[in-house]
Length: 466
Image 1 (cartoon, rainbow, N blue to C red):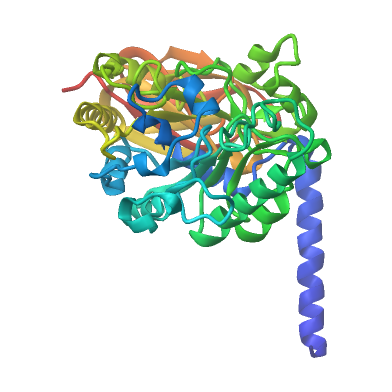
Image 2: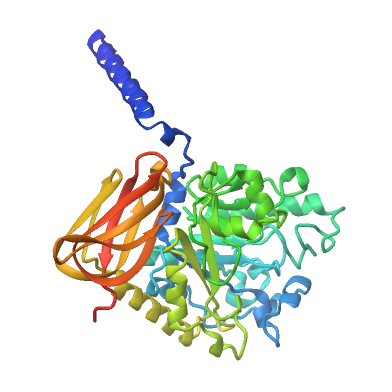
């Protein structure tokens, strides 16, 4: 580098340091705020996900039952989903507006639905498709064709083939074979993370136990092969949290932060007195970015297909309520979908997914107006005065959650500001239903904040319009 280049670089560095110092001085509270990793922002931007539960016990004469799923194995010859079509599955996710979809690569039964070398119980041992089937590959390819981000679920919490319950061999007793099972889990994770390209997340149902406690050491594998994938979850890493119920709702306010990793682990394991409250609401002063995930099955309350359960499909109004109380409360909504033993999602389920997506698009597909801004006040001027009944707010969460309380007002006919609504957390997204009011402008006033607010989006809708 010549002298001029050196001086220019030094000057730029000094200017950058000065700017950074000024930013800290001007906004010192922003420094201490918990902030998401880029992969967490990607996951939160997806907002709606689908998870497909499909497992060997479906092929039992009585269908999937919780007890047989964790205590019984079957001859792989039974596994014959003759009409299986993962494109059709993913089409259901697309229809309801999902940004990502997750497949149960191996559930509690331990049946491996990819070409695995981990152990001899899976599609490789089945005659179906000549023992060459790989549902993980099919699913990931279907997602990519449809523009949906793929994710993978697996269970190291229960595994009928290995006689594992609550992470321990011997149906929970532990002892001989525990280390072998841990190494097998690592092998499964290596295969799933290295063979199928970028994934949006890996989902360990009920999480993992730590390597020091006899669990698998998977984080080095994940970091090597999937550095941009959200990890859910272990005592060492918890990049989102279960909301504490499977009924489709989060609490309000709902913050994306938890006190710390140890407290988040204790809450998940049920070791805290206020566990439900903490999972449902988070902690606005928390140091761990771990946003809420609200999961609920489309068929009430069936995560895997069972015969005679068509009447349990949730009505459209319930799904819309889930959306308002999950995505509208700073969380992701994950809807459980259940392909039947033929390998297809039943048409009744497909229909409901289409209805859900269509109504969401009608309500929120096109805003009457939107803007963005920084500071305590953001004003949206509509192109023409209009009736509004929903206000959607988003923070730029790259800078952390800064808003602690807000008021929404509308400029009504006559030129006076009218109170429309108020709240506490915004985070990634807050959907506020307001009384339908004719306004020319909408104003968001932040009445309490930690650091200067950064409003990524302020938008208004009239969902009552036909």
